[in-house]
Image (cartoon, rainbow, N blue to C red):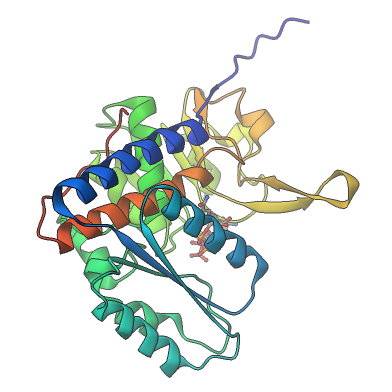
Length: 303
Ligand code: NAP
């Protein structure tokens, strides 16, 4: 049967991430040959959270595949705050380490904030240090959180110039919502940041040319929240019970229904997710260049 509903373009984050990784691999090769620098990424994992273990393994594998040094520090779940801080200080001093990532969340007895503050801002590849957050806001060079950076790249590829577009970001976390809003502002969008206390969330979303959802609530964004022709970026990762007792991953957007209204949409999985690790590698490359006194590099749009 013919449908009068058009289907959105599926934004292929997996393919873009593969292109970005290949480009980073070439850059690392050149850095090693021309400058004798091998980027080093240290990942600190405290405890045995299974999801964090999967992320850390995947970061390590990608770093090694791209020709970086990978340093993994796994600490027991009952590690005290002073030990984590001492490890961060040691990594700050280590010239082979250009990027430090402390896998969050930390176990409940530890406080994230002093740990983030202890990371040298030049090595802060997650862009969480207040100095980097401030630099982003001030429009100055700094480390930018990986997932929003990945979303910016997907949007640039999809839309090119974003000047004058109405952008709505649902979520205001330090890791995603706030830096995403800053990046969209830098693209000359008119940006609204929505959150759990927003009045008339649906009304705000319906005005968006670019709608970015980073909430952590399965399929919250419905088709009638979306302006026809909008570009929808789904950052959410939610697990729902699937067939055969296996979990199924879904985003914060009702993909089936919204893809009939939007002009383009990221799927979950295969949209934003793969971009995060690729952008982490990009940040590690940048950090290595800057710490070696070399010129900065821009995130490419075409590979
Ligand atoms: P977070 O720190 O929990 O923030 C969630 C945000 O959503 C908060 O700002 C919260 O508002 C807002 N929110 C909660 N319920 C809401 C509602 N009913 N209506 C409107 N806003 C609501 O989460 P996060 O770290 O930003 O991550 C968000 C999602 O993205 C999660 O599913 C996470 O797994 C995913 N994620 C994916 C990647 C990736 O690589 N693909 C990376 C990072 C995050 P308040 O501030 O008012 O509480």
